[in-house]
Length: 374
Image (cartoon, rainbow, N blue to C red; front, side):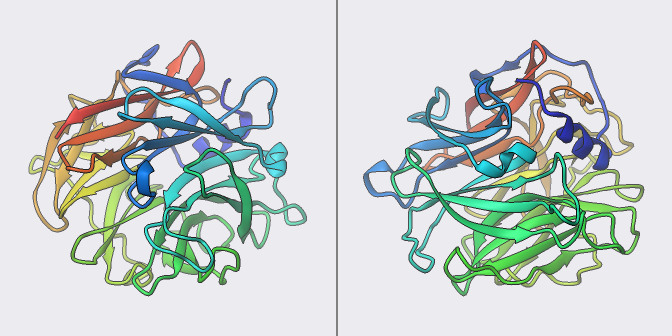
């Protein structure tokens, strides 16, 4: 199905740009119609360990309000749809789903529990009908799902978008998301914590840069073997041009100065990502991917749509070929967008990397998957 009109509002809000030539498909294996894909490899699920699970937000004809599609794969390439999450609140719009496997127990949720969450209400939100982030859980490796909790509720007519989970060093479950409810900031990053996945604390600011028109967004967090947490995010707006940024935390909760922009990972010639960054880790190596690859002066870089940056926090970065190639990522409004928020995960031995991303197939946002040696 085509992306819903409310997503076009989101795209406009984060100042997406069009670069390159639109493609009709991607160099990868087609998974299914959908947007905002996520992929995980089960590591805490007993005999199911090694299974790849992917999610996307889709708009099938029998569920025009939008649903989550859950897919399973043994190799990270070919996926089968194993479940659909149909949340009753999706009638007002659904966006930005995330998929997460608990690496440790949280309250009554055992290790291996799968969490899926998304932003709801983006199609018609107001102070009297605010947006919410709602979470679902699965204890059978993604085949059946039960509603878990409302993680966050917007405090006014502003939006709350793009939830992502991690477990802090003290064992609390953390949800990071983008927040448009602060009059002093067009958008900022916040976090909320829970000791059981059901009851959630009031949000705290993580990144709220001084220029009100700048928009930190799309946080994603991973934990290095030494215990350090790494967050990737974008800052759209006039100052940073949606550049991908990184920052670190010792505990997954405290992220340093809230007003600091963070560091922009780039190769020695200034090559960097803009829009929808996500990361994957193998050991201390960080792999960063995003929607658009740019040169130092902001032009589309050779390899745009099929590249990733590999490096370490505070160290050097190099450009490498990504598992899936989307020719010339471009953003249309309304309509599907190319390579929007790709997601990566390593194999158990760290020798291969699986990716899911999106491409326009005959006017339909479609998820594609691929695996490459690393």
